[in-house]
Image 1: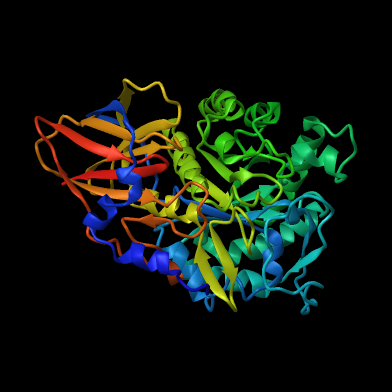
Image 2 (image 1 turned 45 degrees about the horizontal axis):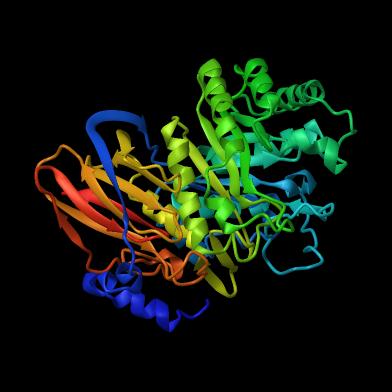
Length: 486
């Protein structure tokens, strides 16, 4: 495991007074002002207990020891997030072949980890063995998580998928949520898996054949889909055609890409994304037609494996936190951040041999984990014209009112007035902050870093006191804050 830097150590031991004396708070400027109005009695969509999730490549199963009970460090990071969903899939799911007998040789480059596939070339074929699935079950038990499992649809056969599904279903049992067929099949015509004229009708015909073969072996199998690269017309068509066969709607979303494009910057990442905003009505329409939940089953900051100095910075934490609340705001049931190995955008990086470390993005998940099992609450940000300032309100699993305000602006602090309509009770302040948006290793939550196996001990925090149900809170530029009423 990487050593904790001196800066991180100092951050972890700082009391609230030290936080308040940070240069970010003393920056000579006139802060912007805004008012956050919370209708604390107006409940909105639930925050499912298993809302949070991670996504890994199917190729990772070629190393059965990775997802196993012996990987206590990684299991600790997941367990610290509460109930969650591990999705196995990605580009390499179309090249991962079920190998029920014998012990296959390890991949040529045996590092023990499979990072995000960048999509630059055809990935090597890998073998998935019964031992890998048995180990996966033990790993899920250790975490208290469940799984969405991707089968080889692109290069495999319906018969082999059914054989694999039968073993996976029997072994994972109640830890299995659903199977997925085809990873981003809407891009098959681009990556050589199918002909250039491959259409949704072609996909639907194959999907139906795979579904039939699996149901014959596993009558109670559940399915998620279409697991497409975006919310193209395929989502609408899939929802209409397979609403009786599917149990969970899933698509993917990457905010930026490719990483080689100089325009893919932190500034762009933090701005509202028109493409994502245009996709939301399609998702909600599909949910309404099928009456099925929706999960963003694979997402992150920049496709193609992420971008250095963007995907691994503190800015990614603010982006991820905002995206999670956007999913909740339209009633989405969950989100899975893609990662693995030392991928630039991976929330947790490391190996079984070297240990694991939390990247800034993981801090956003840890903040959200304090609200899962609760429910969103109606709120509105007034007197604000800055798209980089956003706010959300919720009640946690214990019914306590909470607010999360993000000031993604790199230059301007925010002086916020919160009107919650509650009694004059104390308000706990927990800050998600780093020295700068481009910082890669000094993120803190509650004035403390996250250590080995997800260990986290928030330090003495600020407490605000309301006056006539109003709370005043200063939010530095490039940071977020969690407020909780007690």
